[in-house]
Length: 187
Image (cartoon, rainbow, N blue to C red; front, side, top):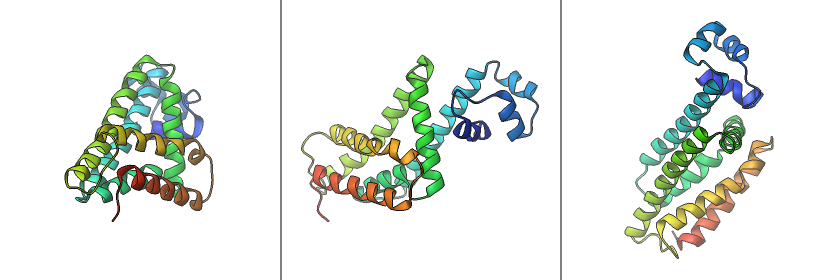
């Protein structure tokens, strides 16, 4: 599935073929077809697995931090990423995922689940900061999490296109600044 997801990043969701994945994975096409009877199933499962793997990695990094602001910063920097290859591939992955979900009911359902999990992570961090008095958002933790999600995703299409690290640094700084205001956080 990881190899299929990597091929998907290069060829795009609609462009992936059994032969591409078989060649990259070093397995016969028949083996892929045995496990994934349709190319749509292979595409869908590769995409869902990769997106969920990215989310799990972000959750694990956030869980290592106890300070709510540090957690929010990790969500921001982890979502945008300063690693050039990871950032570009990550945002291409998300754009392919959302585009495909707009046309595939199974992916749309998965997208809603992933979105709820991402929002839940952000909401828990913001709620913890509100509970300890670090944050004073004007609204609910859920609202603030949705605004954070929108801020990060607003940079997504630009981050999927090749650019320098400075662009990502600026995006992180802008989202952090907006979240400081939104959460009324002053360190």
